[in-house]
Image (cartoon, rainbow, N blue to C red; front, side, top):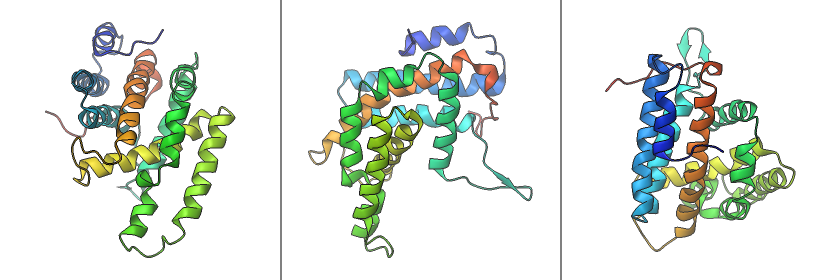
Length: 226
């Protein structure tokens, strides 16, 4: 059984053999601290804040375990979705008991379907809506993305399911974090609630898997020390 609460993750971290490795200890400590904050927002039924705090926890661990692609000695920024894809592949390799698929993808398949089908958290829709050139065929691309995501769900392709899911969640994250959504607003609430519910299970599970395999991940140095 996976540990998925702040208290459980914190207790597990204290007995970890790599707890004295600075890179590892700092990032895991940060991620778990945000899990604790997200749990408080769940208790207060504030889905917006809960979603944001789970996303911060997610950032803390996937950035720590992923290095930007070097080119000619200069660090190049890797697109976020490519970072997500590689991170998910690594996690699924380590997830030997298939927890991610069983507890999240299968359990929340309906919510994931609804998120995939919602055009309001599909980034090209908004680019077209705002008049950016090159996005007039957003509907065709949305249908193609949905086919990939739904086929992945149907055939148990968890990595592809996660990639398509996090494309939508990333757009939702941008809407909230960049001030393009109203706190506790009445419009388009289902994606926020569904997103928070899925992150509530996924992110602690990701961290727990990483706690089980700390020496199989190359932990990058923290970008900021505070």
